[in-house]
Length: 337
Picture (spheres, rainbow, N blue to C red):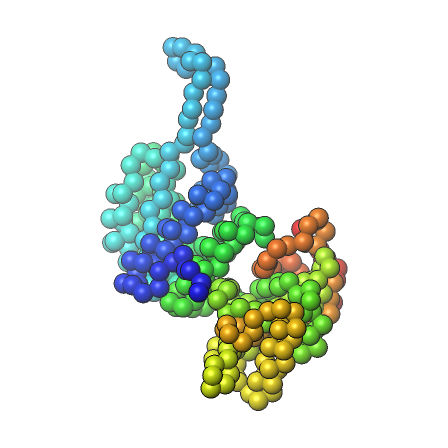
């Protein structure tokens, strides 16, 4: 049984905040450098230097001590909602939570961005407040998915422990409806498919243990021999497992058809031929329209040890994505590290 990092049954708003803070604290515990890189890239200015600084023979006003250890002061105030239910009076009151910190950020966090009229109203009040302050407060409005994406940017595919934590956070967000308007349309999830590659390519399906969390993605890429060798657009996700009464199915997305049941049967046989337990455990089957062969090369040493998410709009430098076959052709001209 999978152990979840983030609780699922709760008073939703309070635990949405608690789970998000747990995610950030896990990132800090895992790598303070990557935590501060997240703060600097997403919330503070380029001049923000939060790390502790060790200095020898630093001259002060009246003396030169042998050494000093300093850290810039900062504070982040977070207001979480389960919908765009922010109102400026509450946010203005939250401004009193700040003291004389040099760097101050207020984060408003919800499943969807703040409405333009609410944003404009609070922006005007914040501007008036900042006029009275030595150090201004910066307001950042973001979503649960946006925060997760920002963390994904500062970790890489070899940060196995942190990737697992982030996957579970995203799984929690999807289950609780905290990610409602997803930008899944632009994401490709890369999966390792060495021994199962030929079967997946032939049957237009990929399978894995259902306990693994994942972020929403419209495209699936199959990795083999230092390159993503195939890409397909996901059209269905079905969980299947065997009981004494026969195979049980749960269609998460798309239709459960006889053809897909037969494909799952073949996948179970294929998995077992490679030593995977396909019957006693729940497995998730990703069906794609068609896998198109490509050659999206990894140009650095060492193979990835798990999944990897690619923003195809960024990789291909396109605002709108073409058809999958065209994407496969364009990826042949790109590479990744």
